[in-house]
Amino acid sequence: MYKNMGRIKRTVEEYMVLTLATFIMVIGIYVFKFPNNFSFGGVTGIAIVLSKFLPGTPGNITLIINMVLLVLGFLFLGKGFGIKTAYVSILMSVSLNLAEVWFPMEKPLTSEPVLELIYAIVLPAFSSAIFFNIDASSGGTDIVAMILKKYTKLNIGTALFFSDLLIVLASCFVFDTKTGLFSLTGLLAKSLVVDNVIESINLCKYFTIICEDPEPICDFIMNKLNRSATVYDAEGTYEHRKKKVIITIMKRSQAVELRNFIRQTQPSAFIAITNSSEIIGKGFRGLN
Image 1 (cartoon, rainbow, N blue to C red):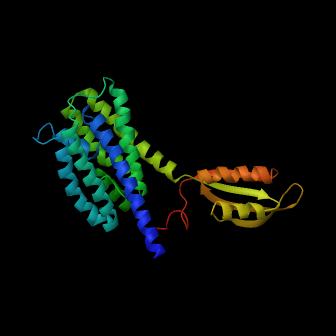
Image 2 (image 1 turned 30 degrees about the vertical axis):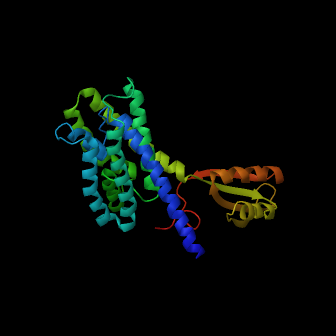
Image 3 (image 1 turned 45 degrees about the vertical axis):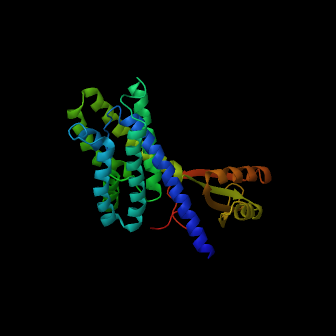
């Protein structure tokens, strides 16, 4: 029963995060991307280009294309991915359509295209990184990118770049040169932001602690921080004194607590702290 309650709680929290990230993406797309015709990839980029030739609005075209690509997500990426992606894709498409009705924008929000480009890049890229981190996607070419990542050795940023490059090239012929260059800049920056945000979300601290009395430190790690550690014997090469080496990994907020505790209780201990965003194992990421 407790396991089921825990699973339900995690699912609710996950979908709350997906919902918030989706609304952040909608703001970036509708307020900053659509009015400026920034077509740096994605289904929304395709929609901006096609809206110049088709009667539908960018929001309507986004909805239609996303529904088609969702089928590919179910086929190639599995049911679990498809359900979360379907939720995000439908929520985003409906929100864009409602925004066009409730908050029509006939011109850009400001007269500063560079400033608007920054927001058009950062907000959707931040949301995409959150989606990827919990095995979901905003739909569209993100699905194509995830398929490429699964069946090739490309990372997500590179996969997004290649899947969106064709859309940017098309925008250069549809709009003026300035818009095309802005779109190309957005594409290059987006792939970098996605990878960096994912690494930042998953960033953990790897501790190597050399001390003489490991018990208080291990007790603090296990009982206060709810983490585990590995202890083994060592010997200093200078005085040949027996030492203990503690190895542990934890989140950044926990790392601050541990570092302060060691400084207060064992100031002579030697501490080496390194960053890692690829921790696989119990308590972190699963092997799959």
